[in-house]
Length: 166
Image (cartoon, rainbow, N blue to C red):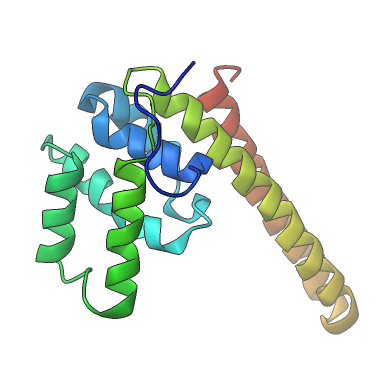
């Protein structure tokens, strides 16, 4: 699949392509994908408010293109200060990422984003479990492991649904 337009700005990451595809896709194709992607699946923290606004606009059956999302971010005060400037830059980068604008793009890009987050989850869990092994009371170790495992299973289920193998 090729880009409809070449990207303008930085080389697009899967996260930028995902958010960019949401900006151009029809609501009916975005809604089911958003149910399977958590805001914290995005590693780029300044894309998270953009995704949150898209999620709210789609839930309200409102237009969710770059101009409307930018306006809603402004209305919410999410563009104030340095973090707001970086959020606006993230929106601009997503808008000009060259993401494919068709019905199959959001779930494909979402699967890449959720897969990256799945691997980050295991990396973080590994560090947390190693630290807990040294510092936690024995009675607290198994509940932590169960919690980490349960969260990982839920994440894997979301990823499988995005890939169409669930």
